[in-house]
Length: 375
Image 1: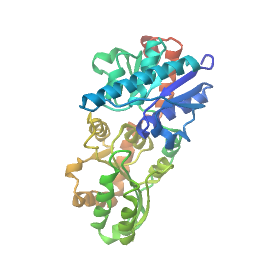
Image 2 (image 1 turned 135 degrees about the vertical axis):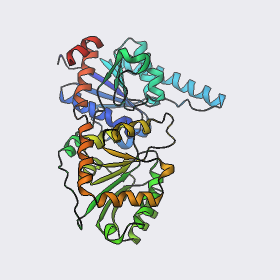
Image 3 (image 1 turned 180 degrees about the horizontal axis):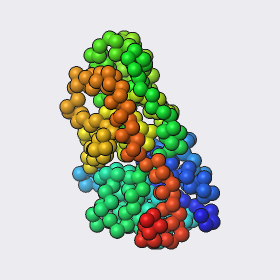
Image 4 (image 1 turned 60 degrees about the vertical axis):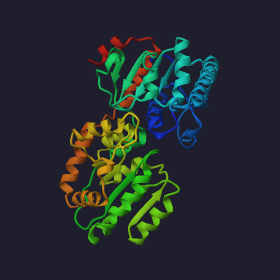
């Protein structure tokens, strides 16, 4: 490592974008660098744990409407955001600007590109998101999580690093998997991320209600539910006598996954990466309304290695879900094998590799030189 540098990380306000940015921030700070975060107001619930020395909010907007008036309004907001970001860059003078997806990354990355600063995108998913796609031609390097290495016209500047995971995920990966044998507690963790927890709020209690009494009595459930769903989810589970913790957000989710025997979740890139690094068997239900169908591609990557089962939401009746849970509860050896297969696909050193790449672009090292250093 050379002298201490300042890295500006840009990420949208959801956990899927912020968690890998947080993991990189921890690694860069451990190397003696400084980190600032630029995001939007949605990030406030996460920002308290984000290790940046400063958090900046720059206005941005989604360009998804077909209404021409709203499109013009969004473009004007983005233009103002680029100007705000330009002023921020001139003030803090970062050595490199790194984006993690979501529309709040567009203004700072465009401003950085216009200023000739070293820029990098990290794409977590197997399919590039719209914001990153819009920026791909403007940045110097693209780092990929599940992205294919031959990612079309940008293959020459794409480096596959994996998705960096937070320190608490690395800690959870050290928890050994201990099968739940007949009559022993079976820990089930269910979460839906920022999109799609509503489906699980109905499906999980319905499926649990169809389990044989002996299996239901073994369950120890952690379930994420939206605030508006939480009371009725809790009431249904209490009615069945299920030992359960229900909340809109768990700050210790990594540790809960580490303690789990089975995870049921959506298949966002961060989720799949964390399940793989920790090494737990999963039933993945891709969010069916994802614009780029990225969740289905992410899930496929883990399923192909034998680390998860993937079911379309439209196919997942309470009866089928109950059967899948029961089958796994009755097959501890099979569940342990799936957990081991999942962990083999994990990339626990992704944060280190991404930090190496961040340092390299800040130092002016070319992609060709960086790739040769990996060989």
